[in-house]
Image 1 (cartoon, rainbow, N blue to C red):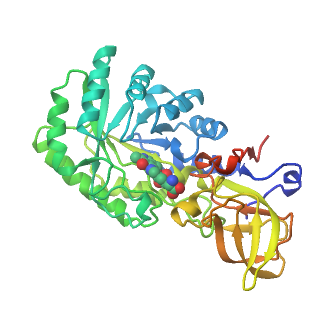
Image 2 (image 1 turned 90 degrees about the vertical axis):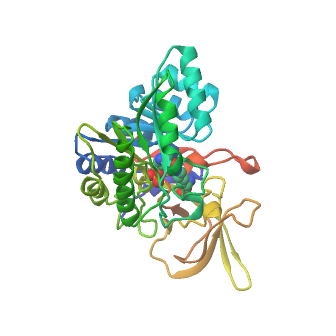
Image 3 (image 1 turned 135 degrees about the vertical axis):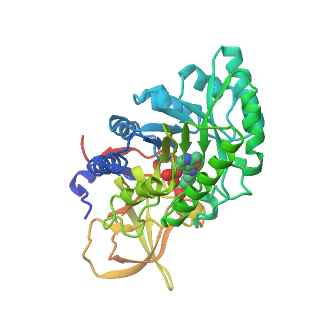
Length: 383
Ligand code: LLP
């Protein structure tokens, strides 16, 4: 069971994020153990959580970085990551961001279109630099996940269509300031089924063979992120099954001599170590429903409103009371500001602490100031 220092919470104003750093450390140790392979390099997807304390722990564990903006590159550098362990992806890199990445000396751009390739070449030329690139390919694999977080299907704004890959590789070979390193893939997020990853390996094996027949070779293959977590029962699976995940690639992907395999894990690294802690403001008795109105809302955790995601809700103050059904809702003026409907929870009273679990990924980082609310602070299990 996760432990929360409720007596310390009483001193704090809510809502806030609480991170269990020992769980983060154990998760990182498990990644190091299961990914042990000189060919494997794990990059942490900063978009999941850029809290400086979290970033520094991840840096200390030896992971690299997957960044999707100039801001994330700067946050990574600030947290101590080496510039040559940063890969930079995104469909809409601005000129300023491309220049920052070149100036910083990042490891690789994950390029998503022809015009982007041309602009990177042009800016690199002006700066007297060579840009290393990987091409993000859309492998057209259904990851069986939420439509908004599926990214590998053919009709997507992301990546380059398989059919266009030979042309963009030829184009890159003709540009003076571009060095092609590899291919990049990402099929979606919160993938809890192994089969899409097996399919991805098979697609990559075929594609690399086809490209080699056209004399294109690669020093890196990047398979993106996507490994899912157990939102329903975070205490049963506090650490995702990294062993099976890395073994899938070890067993199914045919790496060439000297080829590196890159991973970009976000959610699986940080989700389970974070909870959003909120206090109950009112218990409102309706005609057929009972509402627990809490002081956190979609401003602090937007995933339920945006993706119909469900985070396990726990009454920390009285875990053993008689159970009733509640709709757990926030204070924001939107009906989607709801964390759970008909939740069976131990009796809730005003002032109780409620935890919204598994919120370490895409929680704090996606917080907004809608309704002029302040951004939530964060606290840690260690001072
Ligand atoms: N690499 C690329 C190219 C990505 O687009 C993403 C996530 C990752 C790596 C990391 O994926 P992960 O290991 O975290 O699944 N806000 C949504 C998730 C959006 C994911 C976007 N891309 C959510 O709250 O579920």
